Amino acid sequence: MGIMSEIYFTSNHRDLCVEHGTGAGFQFEFSCGRCSDTWRSPFEAFRAGQVAGWVSKGVNAAWSVIGGTATRGVSDAADGLAGHSYGSQKDAAFSRAIANAEGHFNRCPRCTSYVCDRCWNPGQGLCLHCSPDTAAEAQAAQQRGLNDMASQRAYDAGQRQGEGYDGDRSRQLVCPQCSAETRGGAFCMDCGHRLAQAAQCGSCRQELPAGAAFCPSCGNRN
Image (cartoon, rainbow, N blue to C red; front, side, top):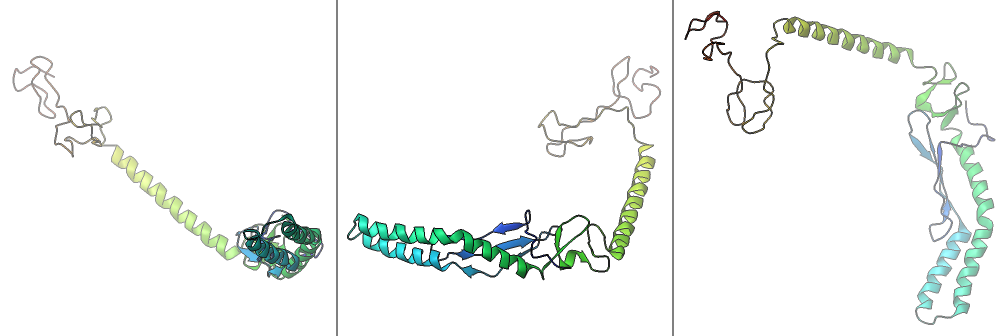
């Protein structure tokens, strides 16, 4: 399914035309509405613009030597003559470019996007955005299912590990000695400063061994 000759690309073409200078000419770049790959029409020289460019280069070279308004007028006249025919020739070149693009793009009747052959489903007469490839979609769905299940199992494993996590114990996340991040460790990885604060006896303020029910220093029950 090709582009109709009366259809003019409105949102997916770029004007590369040059009106003045020795490189003057007409060229247009068309892009796929799905993958954004581009195709450029063959360059068509704008002879009047090129001649004006050659005249201007010659005039500029002579201007520095002899000067004069008459010489400058020749350059202006050449530019004016080229500009007079530029618009009509550009329109004609654009029409030819669209005709050449017919073999490179397809217009989807559902979303009206122009897409390249790689983004076209010829069996359905639609672009792959509107009619995705079944095998590709099935493979992508299988991968999504695998990832979702792996994520769920990892989440469940994290929950089981979290059952033994002491959420009541405060953790020093920044070392007060050197301000380095500690990630909740017992000692600073940068300076070795002790971060974990041992439990203290409520009576004599001595440190208590982990899990001690009585203070080994004063015998007070904690």
